[in-house]
Length: 85
Ligand code: SF4
Ligand code: SF4
Image 1 (cartoon, protein in one colour):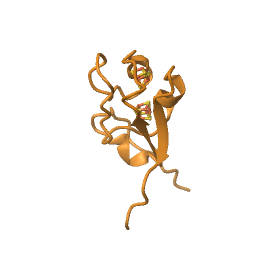
Image 2 (tube, protein in one colour):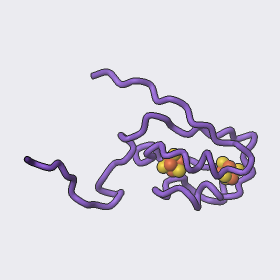
Image 3 (cartoon, helix red, strand yellow):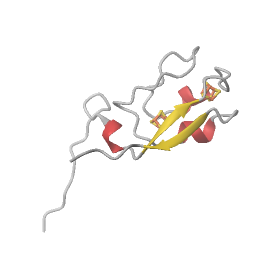
């Protein structure tokens, strides 16, 4: 029996953005630029922490940690559109 496995690698080499079924949307009017989401994002892809998050969706894996941690509920996870095969 063969066991499937993937090679270890950094986020730079693994574009984790293809994993997500949901993506975070930021409500800029609610965001108070506290940078909490920046600190919790496991990918570190939310841009300048002194500004409203600008997410790099090439690497956002849709984990929703940012949504859970945002103290003012400025982040909402929305369904990714289905991709054509
Ligand atoms: S969903 Fe996860 S990976 Fe994407 S921006 Fe939020 S915390 Fe980062
Ligand atoms: S945690 Fe929420 S309020 Fe704070 S910077 Fe992120 S989106 Fe803005």
